[in-house]
Length: 225
Image (tube, rainbow, N blue to C red; front, side):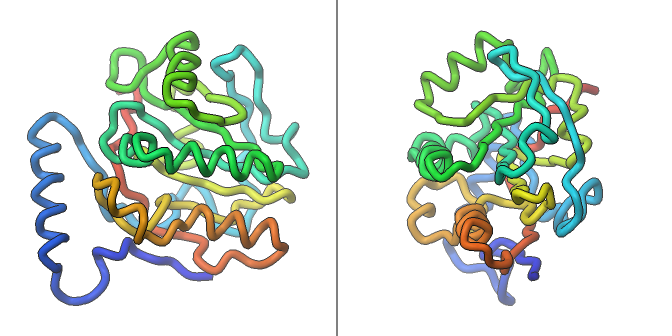
């Protein structure tokens, strides 16, 4: 099991593309976005290889979704904020939707989580969340609404997107970034190492996850103050 920092943190000196990327992130910060880069490995709230924290959360469609009821299933938790530039990268490209559909067809239960508090950027009512799924042509099993931040804080979710993969035995097998390229550039998806895909492929093949913990990046989760 390894912990990896995003690709752009590796090595001694940043290259030109990294400098350009940081300039772009600076512009986003000035525009009012708070972004998260380099907040450590898996959050302290969860431990890789141990049982994932149990929860029951209300979905946008009204269902009560319990991790206990998903026993025997591989589960993905994806923290989401529809306006976050890092999230937009993966949705505008169709990357996130493709993952949802591909692994949903393989029996993986994909849960998108919205932890933005009411009055905060990214907050959605149940109706709005269902409309977002339709507009994005997304395919999660459920969208979990977490305006009080209980589920997000239980898992230590810090950014959007922040990804967690739970195996069929209920153990947390992966926590961190979706990939190794902390940028908002759609073009970077083609050359990025997708940690979530790698984790899911390993789990479904009955193999250990090689990279089980990475540094999450993205916009900060807009928790209730």
